[in-house]
Image 1 (cartoon, rainbow, N blue to C red):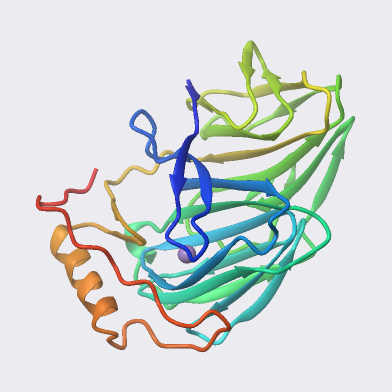
Image 2 (tube, protein in one colour):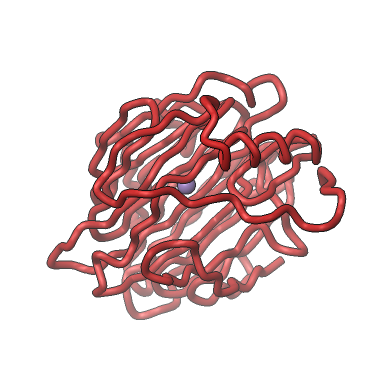
Length: 294
Ligand code: MN
């Protein structure tokens, strides 16, 4: 299944557009991966200004292709992230954070992803990790940098709560490589730069190709004329219904309504913190329907 990205305007100070592939009407999750936003590349390197907002029941992953982003959160983390590094924030019971991109000579180009926490971990204490030294694999012409989980026999130290993997792949134009993948996983392959052929499937720039569990081998060919940059995301199918609304993941309407009230009333579930942006993003009105986990 080929997922076409859609343009979404983020709630920020600068009206930035992102390309969202999941959640999608035909594909809600890939393992526990439940949200994939691709931003840039843009020469407007200071274009991302996202004031304080909360999260619950998920992990946020920030992956930079180019540029610099500063992360701050309500448990005291202050972290600059650069290309090839990973910021991983486990929201658990509740956290608030802000992100601002810094002016650099290059472009700003990033992918932001969410991982849903399973029932037994979703109310864990919030924590934050920065990884600047992730494992790199050279497999013939293919270069893989592992963000989370295991790929080609190597494993990242990244803290995860369900059986999943994520890796950045790079391949020069015209090159091809075959890799073994976990057949218990479903997979998504997001083309960030160039275009690819994956087994018999043609995948255009910015699209995501989905594979059901059972896939054992993936032959990746860069059919474009620039370096292929892609993310391979995999995991055991989630196996539980989740309720994603705004920046929260819960299980029931009542729970989401409570999180919304607690954020908008500035209650202690989400601590306050200082940043250079100032202010905070209020949660929108709930829709006039009873939200249901799906
Ligand atoms: Mn966020």
